[in-house]
Image (cartoon, rainbow, N blue to C red; front, top):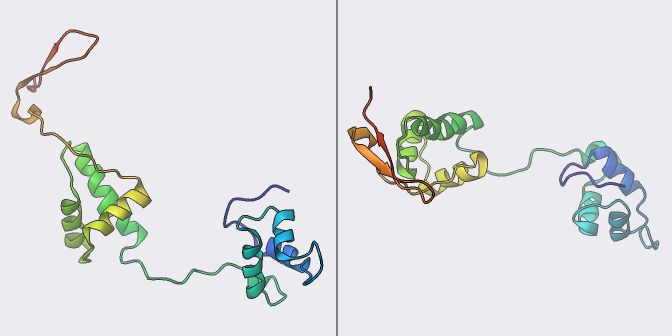
Length: 160
C-alpha cells in the first residue's frame, strides 16, 4: 500500500489501522501495523493515534494545533512583507530587514523583531536577502560591463 504524504492520514484510515490493533498478539502491535501500512513515524505514531482514539472515527479527526496565535494574519504578511519587498524590487531599490520592519510597524501597528521578519520572509515567501551594490545608473552615467567571452560593451544609461 502506498503511503500518503506526511500528515495526510485521514481519520477513516487511522480508524481502520487502529481497529486491527490487538495488544499482546504477534503481528498486531503498533510497530507491525506501522510497517504493514507504511506509516511514517512508525509504531510511535500509531501509538499516539491509539491514545487519542475512543473507538470512533470522530475522535481521530485533526483539530487545530494548539500554539501561539500569529501576530500578523496571512494577508497582512503577504501585503506588508512580501508586497513591500516585491514593490521595492520592481523599483530596483535595496531593501533590508530594518526597512521591512519599519513598514510593518507603520502599517499594522504591530512590532516584530528583525529575526521574526527574516523568518517569515524566508519560510513563507522564500525571500532571501543578499548584499547589494550601489549602481551609478540613477546618476545617468555611462557604465562598462566586462564579459569574459566578449569585448567590453558600453551602455549609455541616460534616458532618451
